[in-house]
Image 1: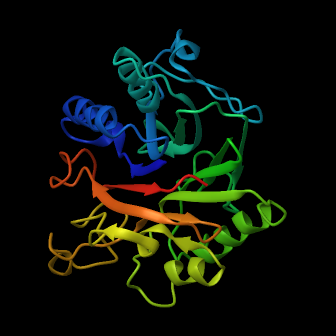
Image 2 (image 1 turned 180 degrees about the vertical axis):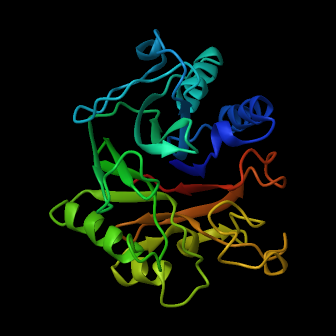
Length: 282
């Protein structure tokens, strides 16, 4: 089974149309079983998409959203369908992004989605406040997959630890294997911050567990949200940061973990690179 996560940056990206095609070309080759995406945007001003259900869209039952014509996930789904690849997918928005977008998160699944949930992990739940954070989860087979875009460790209003604790509380009685995938805004080499906090709570980093892996860097330069946190000279292409992860609630065998869309494995399509993990069937 292949699992992919990527913070897409979607409509904000320069040369967006070209990058959209490149991303879908990668998906057509790799064909992940589950795809978790973050910063999946649509323009507030665009009309509603009329054929969204025909693309495999499944609405989250506890969330009322409108999928618009330029919704990034919708466009990915249409291009995949044109290539003969039908995924079921869902999307929720959590806030206004850059004053002009509904910014949300999405998950795609090759297998049927049998259950879904979405919920705030932030105390702030104001759609117009950029610190509002949601998690989106799907159940397929007997496993849960969550897409997440976390806040920062040292944010005084919305610290990482409190958001992670909300997530853990939600899952406390769940016995199925769970994966949480996405942009954690926590460098793996920053001690006693977000990454260590997740690991101490008992989750497994699939990159660490992988038999075959690369260096894991998912951000190679200073990006939005980090410009006041790091110095450009400490963020060389050779060093970068590993802030996008796929964690599992249980110890499982992991065959490989590789960074994609980093100009080594497929062209760059976002200000983040993707993480593609292959695991043995559970």
